[in-house]
Length: 330
Ligand code: PMV
Image (cartoon, rainbow, N blue to C red; front, side, top):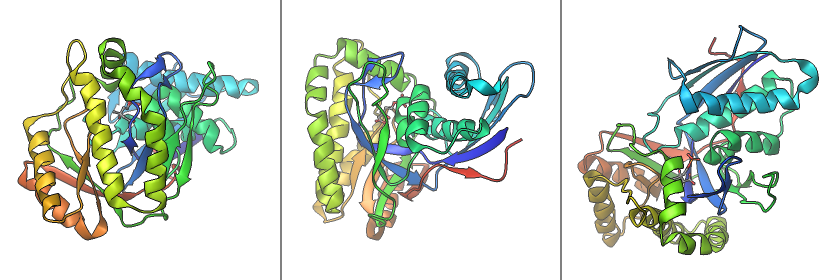
C-alpha cells in the first residue's frame, strides 16, 4: 500500500496560459513542453495509515489550497479503486529545486504524486490515466508523466476526459538539446500562475489573440523538433513566451513577472545571437529565464546567465518518464 515515484519538471515551449474550466483544469489551448533532467521531485504515498490524510511538502505540513489539491488527487484515486477501501493516506514529497519560483515544481510534484498514488492503490501503470490525474492537481503536471517532449491536448469534451498529455518525442530524439535554468530570484512569486492566468483570461484585451494562434503554434513546434531545427524552435519559443507575458502585462491589474535581471539576461541573449551563439529564452510565471540552446553552447549560456546576476544555474537535458522507485521517503 506504499509507493514512491520520481518525476522531472517540464518547461513549456508552447505555453498554457488560461483555463476554460477552472474546476476541472481544462486549458483554452494545447501546449508542448520539454521534460527536464536532472531536476526532480520524489513523492511517497501510503494508504491505510493514520486517522486522516497527512500531506508533507518539502518538510512542511501542507495547508490551504496546496493541501486541497493533493487531497483531490488522492480522493480521485480512492474513487477509482473503490472496491478496496484504501483509507486515509500519508504523502511526503521532496523536490531538489526551489518551489514557487516559476520553475514548474508543482508539475513534477503532481506527476510524481499521480504515479505514486496509483501504484500505492494497486492501479495499473497507465500514462494516460496518470496524466489525467496529475492534471487535477496542476494543469502543467499532466506533461510531466512522460519524458522527452510532451503535448497536452486541450481536448473538447466538457468532462475533460480527452485533455491529457502524450509524448510526441522521447528523450533520445534530440539528446543535444539543452535548457539552462537561470535562477535570478529565489523569492516566492507574488501571483501564482493560476491567479495570473485567470486574471489574463478575464481582463486582458489580448487574450483572444493569444488563444487564436495556439494550436497552429504547437503544430509548428512539432515540425521544428522533428527536424531538430534549433533556430526555428528558439525563435518560436521566445515569441511564445513574450505573447504569454503580453496578455498579463495588458491585464487589469497588470501583472509583470519580469525583474531587472530577467530583462538584462534577455538582452544579453540577443547580443550573443548576433555573435552566432544559439541561445533563446523562455519564461514561465516567474522571473527566472530558461535558456534554450544545445550541448555545444550550454557553458556559454551559463556564463551569460551568471554575468547577468544569476546566482544559480542548472544545465538541464531532456528528461525521462516519471518512474517508481524502490526507496521510500518514510
Ligand atoms: O499548471 P500551472 O498552474 O503550474 O500553470 C503553468 C503555466 C505556465 O508554466 C506559465 C505555462 C506552462 O504551460 O507550463
